Length: 95
Length: 436
Image 1 (cartoon, rainbow over the protein chains, first blue to last red):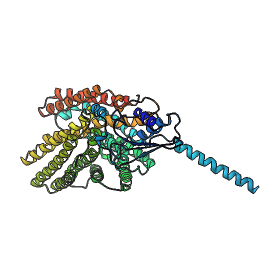
Image 2 (image 1 turned 30 degrees about the horizontal axis):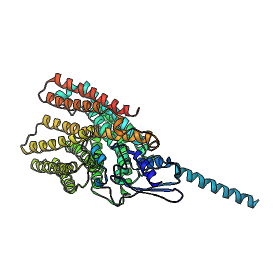
Image 3 (image 1 turned 45 degrees about the horizontal axis):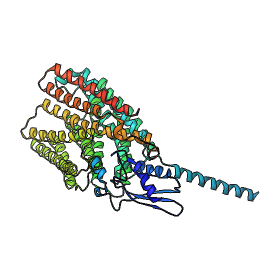
Image 4 (image 1 turned 45 degrees about the vertical axis):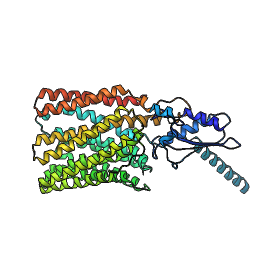
């Protein structure tokens, strides 16, 4: 389930940068319990990002569409803060 | 009977809790209130076009560099209050919650404030041009609207848990805004009833506090948030920010005191401090941009960055003019014009291509992200068209200033016409975003 959810997050694109949130290195962890309730721990490039609500809601929407997923919780954390080193080579290339 | 009412009460509670759960679970909509910022922005675009066409119809006054005439007051107030201040206020309704992580104190007060400001600025600008002796009444409405705005922002920013340098820039800008309004009211009062002998000192302070205090400090403050965000900068220091803040603030104070004392040496010192403050700000922006991850910056954003360079050059020229005691009114008038257009207005014109797509995207696509394919912000406007408009703005401003300084009326008319048409095309390109 966790890998399925993580795969689905490639479809959530930051509309400002035009790059998906996994390649941007915003997703820290995906956890699923026995009932397939999913918790996504993620960050954003900066606190006070205007896209905060939009991106987290996009994550909820997309993960809710994954078959078999129960409740979806998105936890945005600032510690550790986002680091450019988290980005994939593809994201770096696109920038 | 008792049992039945108890059962009904329990059922009601269960129903309420279900509704609350439903609201929580389906509340994917963003918290951004787009109506208020958009209302400000749409009015501002109208005022922008009106100001440019007003200046076009009276371009003969520009040739004579006659800035202190009712028609020019009308155009200037449509441009600076109707456009620039309305955009600044509208943008703050969106940016303050983002930058300071605190919600707007009262959206209802925002709507009331917008109504007062809209009627106030429109009537003030029109009356300044048509019947200046009663412009004070438009001024009163404008003051009410703006004081409500200041009250709103003070209460909103006051709730911010941890204040930072951006907070202080914005608070200082708001204070300057308040003093600008106060000085403007005194001027309108003096035109209507007379009795204030220091009209010129108040006028120069009004202009300095308005364009250099309110707008520049506000752009400084928000640039510290927006420039790293739009360039995706990481690991920058902002080490010059405090120096920029204090130099600019003290510079403003010294320049204003020098107006009152009519001390030119003090004024040169004030301009030097303002130039230093601007330079410190530029050093930070340079550092931020050198640490950016986004190598290909969006063109409208680059236009806003170009405005920073313009601002620095104009501050340097102002200092040099003051140092060499060049007091020619025409030169200073056009320098103020360039300050307003190529620094303040250019900054706004660039950032609007960021703010409006964001607002409209949030309204239209926020609940669709993750469910279906949604456009990127950049897809919501034609970037190539925006570049053409920006080039026309640069050509228009440069040609207009050159034409006025060499006193060729044909050139002034032609370039002001170019500016008016470009403004109309710009406004329509922003409105077109709302049809995406």
